[in-house]
Image (cartoon, rainbow, N blue to C red; front, side, top):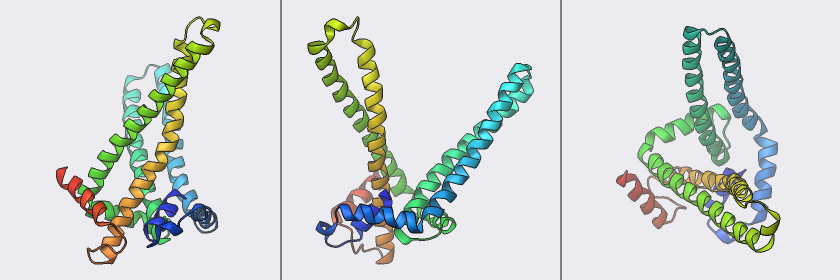
Amino acid sequence: IISMSVAKWYFTKNKASIGSWTVLGSIKDTILYHSGTCAYGALIIAIVQFIRAIIARAQKAAKDVDSKIAGAILCCCQCCFACMECCLKFLNKNAYIQCAIFSTAFCKSCRQAFALIFRNAARIAAITYVSGAILIVGKLFISAVTTILSYYFIVENIDGELNSVGGPVAMIFLISYWISDFFMDVFDMAITTILHCLIADEEMFDGNGGYSERELTDWVDKNAESR
């Protein structure tokens, strides 16, 4: 839904025409036309997670019987499936974006996403690095501001009712970081979708984007070169 909304915004000449109805239209299109794609991607991740759960159960059994060799083998298997899950999540995310832009099936979207990442490895790596740093700073900033404001509120209003403000402040920091993570994930998906749209735009118009702004293209290329 997020990717489709961003893609519609990107491929619209008059950005002022984009509003809340764009998001509602994306929700409708996702439910009507792409529910199978969402379910397919989720099923693949669920299968890997189910296998990891079985291995974890076997690891516990191996530990109970003190089998060092079995534990080592199962630990290697767990690491391999953990890496596979991370790779599949990354590929799923990019496949969903391709599906949102071109309305292709899941398998075709995976192939297109893999080819796009392979063709533009420098750009993808640069934007992933920069956006990752920005998102972490954003999460910490939101959590820190929320915690500081809460601390002063507690000290001024209910300090006499507490033995220590450390516990409530720590809990507030964790909750605010958790909530900010949800919101910043929206920005993460939007940044990745814009990059996909930019590359697709350039490939459709022979290197000259028909919808992209020159400042955006220059910024992406500059960061790709610096990496």
